[in-house]
Amino acid sequence: MSLRLRLGLLYGGLTGVVVLVIAAVTLYTHAAGHSEQTVHVLAAASAGGVVLALALGWLMAGEALRPVSTLTEAAAEIARSRGFDRRVPPTPDRGELGQLTATFNAMLASLERAYEAEKRFVSDASHELRAPLTAIQANLDLLERRPDVDAAEREEAVREAAREARRLGQLVSELLALARADAGVPLRTEQVELDRVVLETVAAARHLTNGHELRVERIEPAVVDGDPARLKQLLLILLDNAAKYTPGSGRVSVAMDRRDGQVCVTVRDTGPGIPADELPRVFERFYRVDAARTRDPGGTGLGLPIARWIAEQHGGAVALESVVGEGTTAVVRLPLIAAG
Image (cartoon, rainbow, N blue to C red; front, side):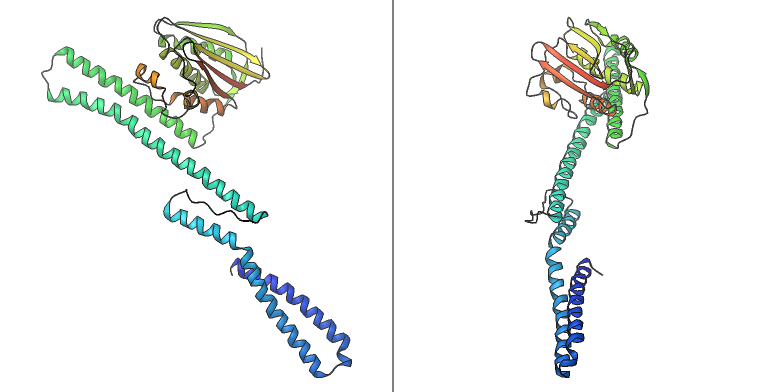
């Protein structure tokens, strides 16, 4: 039985019961003083009232359920077309059905944004994977077609293929990390001495420098609830970016202090900086600042999105501040558990 039929019967039944009660009371009160014809008229009027009540209930139920029917048609159309650009016309009803329509449209808008982002991500991932694969294939084809190539050229081809293979491996690893993020896979956390992780990461990152001065300005002891491997990955991403985009004679500095129940890790460089109009987009997947792209042709454009995901998984955040010509500062804020 449909919802409309059930509501119609409910409306009509309730009204009919009222009519029957009124008729019964009338009959009981006045039957002794009225003729049999009057009793028949009252009975017929009661029956007609019940039928009229059912008809009115049916119409009222249909009018009340019209927005629900519109939502159903919209959902069916979206399922057929696999598109999220359709919206349900707003209803003048400001009650529950009006709120349902507004919520449904908001859900469609959210799904449309997520769908478009997913399409861009797949397209960008395909493009990024194609580049190293093409380079590897080209170098292998060269070695296969020319077995008599001189040693220097052969060595260069092998070196180029190995470099692109490492880049491909890094890209696949980062794509898997983002897939875990999209799937909502939680991290396994424990109490971590963040100051120790920072110092270990700085020591491990010294091989990333190319003549840079890597300086630890200050470190305040702090304990956070986190995954030490992921926290180290987050810091390595920030240090790697700072080293890549800073001239060899530049400086990269790291600091860590406690502020208002949080621990703040700051990575500052003296690189060329990021233009203000580019800064809001640096955490987008596969996005690279134009000036930086030529300096880092082997980058994947996934480091900062992964860094943001790691920070958010720890209940914190990461942000960039930059001034063109002066450098860039990355700040990671995490909830503080205890301090030494």
